[in-house]
Image 1 (cartoon, rainbow, N blue to C red):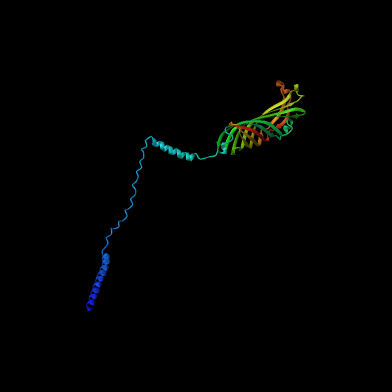
Image 2: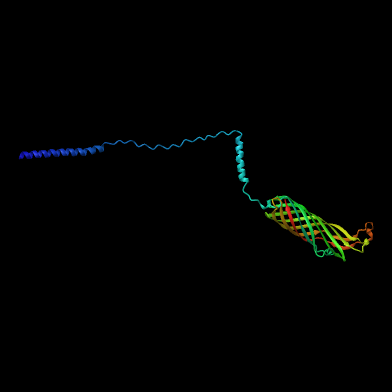
Length: 293
């Protein structure tokens, strides 16, 4: 009995020693694993980014004769951009162009009482014809020069006998225009000229029963202002139609009316009839239709 216990005790001690050595071996194995340094590959620094190699631009050689041409083309393109902006035609460039012809009526109010033997009222009506040309134009302004012909006759009764007065006026016209719109312009005009007049009075008591007549020439000067309205062109032509109106004052040199019969060599046998001094000037207005080209 004692031997069996001893045997069992020895077996237990042996098992304990075996288990202890196994546990110690297991404890030492991790320690050994911890103590052994793990060699890791050294971390490499990121490679620096390299700038891309410059791309060489290959330009075709320009022939010697093409370089000036290319420069000239660039200059012309820039010049077009600067000098050819989008523009709308200005009014100064529309309307009366170079030539102009007008036909109308001029009425002058002569307040001189010496007109009474030849007219029943103060209005002396004349047919008016003119031609003009544009001399200079600057944007909306223009300078025009031309000629004006005014012709008129008035009939009445003097001393119970028929009488007649004829006035013909030829003048040079100088006109300045301002045209704010294409179909409308205003103007001022000055027209120095020469007035030729003739007066006649039928007198049955005169020698040979002839008429008493006289003629005269006087210097004249008109100053006026007016406006014109354009109707547009006539059909497909380049001729434009305008309505023109102006008014002002016409000054005329005074002339003495001495009417005498035409007796040729016997002119001294008959005395003249004195009708006084006539001043054929006064305020006037003119209406006319103009054709311009």
